[in-house]
Length: 252
Image (tube, rainbow, N blue to C red; front, side):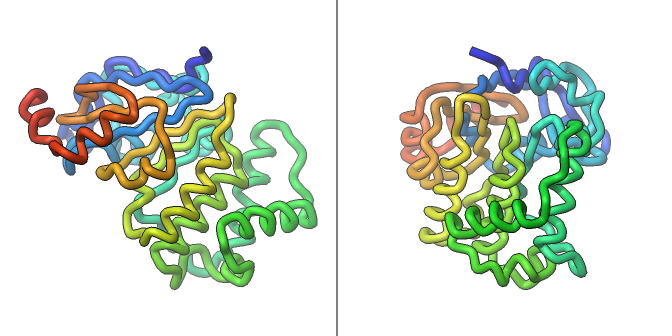
């Protein structure tokens, strides 16, 4: 199998405090991995380090996307290379229409890869197809990015971005946060449509309920900034029953 994401002995800090402590993870193309763990275990930090958020510094180890060292790439280069981070709390962007944002994001990536820009008619057609899958009113796409959106609407909009950009590696940072059951089903359906033999998906979550709809191939338990156990989807059910206390004690 082709290793899409390779993380080796990764250590990272923010404001001088080390959060990731020798992190190891391999995600092959075609796989869905779930990372579960308690608050403060560094799950979101991992997503920020991989995506290049300012202030999150790699001090040791490597993170490779399709063999390329992410630490040597700018944020836009990581995006063009195929990395997409779906935020736990998507940001609002006042004054920028969602459709304008989608057009700019898609064509900027295509240009960086040496591809032709997508024409406006083709873009509108594609966005309409995706909006239908996600039960989104096209009127939403004329509004500023995420401004005045409910939690479910924000997650739908972000899933639409992900489906439009078709990244190689999708990282979902607690996508289930703030979603009711209906919105969870819709967003999960969108994510599932992205599953393919050429793409990897990493789902970061506290709770097993998201994994009822996005079935993982591999489940990892993270504690104290590193993975302490790996198993199949049954591991998520065990965590739902027993919690994380055992793994927190092991990692201490």
